[in-house]
Amino acid sequence: MVETGPLPEGTARVPAKTLGAFMAAAFRAAGVEEAHARLTAEVLLDADLRGVRSHGAARLAQFVNQVERGVVNKRPKLTYRAGSDTTGVLDADNALGTVATDRALEEALAMAERHGTGFVAVRNSNHWGYPAYWSRKAARRGCIGIAMSNGGRFVAPTFSVEPVLGTNPLAVTIPGTPGGEQFHLDMATSAVARGKIETALREGKSIPRGWIPEAFGEKIPVDERGIMSYDVPLLPLGGEGTETGGHKGYALSLMVELLSSVLSGLGVENAIETSDPMNLLTGHLLGAIRVSGFREPGRVQAQISGTFQRVRSAKKAPGHDRIFIPGEPEAVAEEENGRLGVPLTPPIMAQLRRLNERLALGFEL
Figure (cartoon, rainbow, N blue to C red):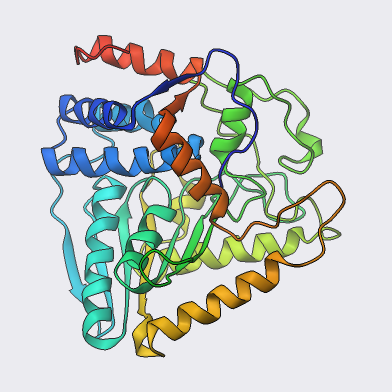
């Protein structure tokens, strides 16, 4: 979800082209091959452009560190096995999650083109950036895009204070006609994505009630890179207990966990029992459903626009003059950041400068 709060003092704006080139150069310097470096940089840049600052350049140092330490396979051999005309499984061979996900989505889109739908489960992958990139890519090809992933051990099930599940994100994009409106959902099944808390801590903001269990206390440890300690339990969507629907968020998280693991054969215990939640293999599920397999796309778009118009015309709450359709805040951010430059807060700029110096990239930041 886009971060709409004011940018902290000292934030600098960098042209998107420059930031993208810098991130690609960092991956190349770490030994990632050219095409994979460009793809991963593009995914991170897309997150920053759309205002999802927790999943953009803020993740670069972590990605590069994992590549350099050999946690991620720089030269993977991806293996795809079709299970039917519309389903398959991809073994990512511990590849960068961006590389594995892109291949899986292309397989799903090819099946959707031939048969109307395509779903690919991925195992032995890694962090994929953020789900919206993949669902939106499917939408640009005329398909309803579905993307979900497990990963990490960060979220406490309802009535627990122990991290067991991942933030387990989910994205769905329903396309319209070219240049038309679309529905775009991009969410963690935790109350908030882990990166949002880290962003708030780096920027000196307080953590709202309902993000972590009250029993944990107010002091949240972070390291020198602004990465939060992995023993901090996050709450599921809906918060603590059942009164505000926390059990529903927990159920959603567990659903994504199962769909992202058991379909591909990646054991759920991989995420639940691994001692270091950032050094584990993850699973994804990518889906593509061709809109024209149901109705003529123009008619679908007309009905989507009519529905959106009715939603926007609903009576506004005091102090509010606009109702946003999911995906609109990100579109607004994308236009602004593309025009003015990508905002980089002082802590993130410091990280990039350290990478620039250590990897001898030669960029002016």
